[in-house]
Length: 464
Image (cartoon, rainbow, N blue to C red; front, side, top):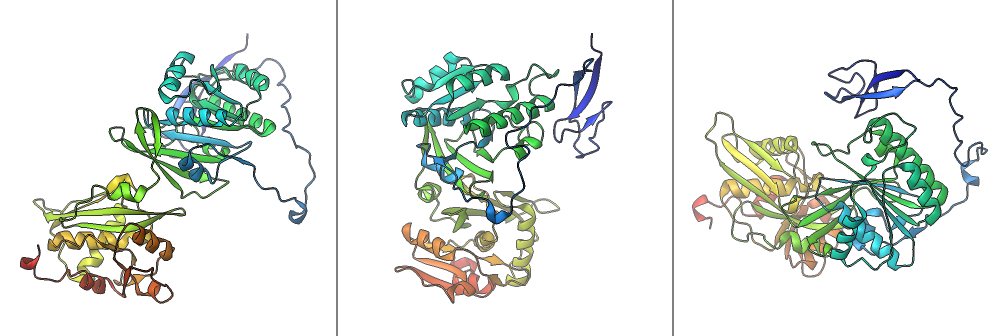
């Protein structure tokens, strides 16, 4: 009988320790070392299989042939946009998100669409029975599309079925439920997740089958399991959104075949995920036109311009220290912008609570949102409503200067398409930019100039 040994493995970085520790010495995470049992081998270790291509000669970079990646459309335009134009053969994509956010629903729709195109699809589930998947397919109208369903979590059986069917696309739901019988640890452990993902990646590259892995997330929103999992895959997609809301955002945080800033929007309905083609119209559909503190700006998500509503609420504080809270904006960035407003625009905020929200669940991390945040805060502080057909965007420096932003032409075209008449931009952008017809572009050198254009210095009694 082999001797049983116990080790403790960090679920964040894979660090192995002989005894339990409260803090991982490698990555510094707390309470992440989990106990695993391993069997010490009494026989010589088996020779590892060499991956295909091992031993190939090194080539000069100029002698390597240029080959464009072969892509297959999924029939879901928003998903194709996030993937960079479609599914690349032999790629491995990791899809993460909170429970109930819609990961399995979207991947079932993907399986049905690819099957309708005449391709073979294998849907592997280690969490649901085949009957449960059939019920979801009936709800989505995908019961007659012909994709294969396998309810199994033993990787050796999955590999055998994969060789029998030779699918073009395979879904694994989820990677944390898969296990290999030659590893003495429970499914979901660091070693099981790492080795199962490595084997699936080898099979995907060998057979040119595109694989989608569903990954569980931890309470802080990151993919559960070792961090090496995200390094192994070709793309990492995150589903975002509140389960109580009908709208979902699919965002790429890693993509070897496309942009990492692309975003797709979906609406969760009874018949599955419905694409939201006009995201700007959706984000502005419930905008308040007669309330102070509401400013529209155009954000760039990859190559896609999106108009969004930046909201601010400034109210006198009842605490010793004023509160600052944000949703969709970095809190540290807000502290800096409020200091600039006080110093350069002479608006008192040190005794005011400030709340900032980006409507629609978007996260604005580009500098072009600075001017919109400042204008929203000043509008609420002065209780002055901005005209509904105005949009503002620009980067704000510590001296109160406005700096040029990227993709100004695309942003202006989106503003025109949505019916806006006036836009405030940094003056550096207006020097080399031709304004679209029907749009009045106002250039401003400083934050003070932008506030004067918006009428922020009218007497408070005259504000409507």
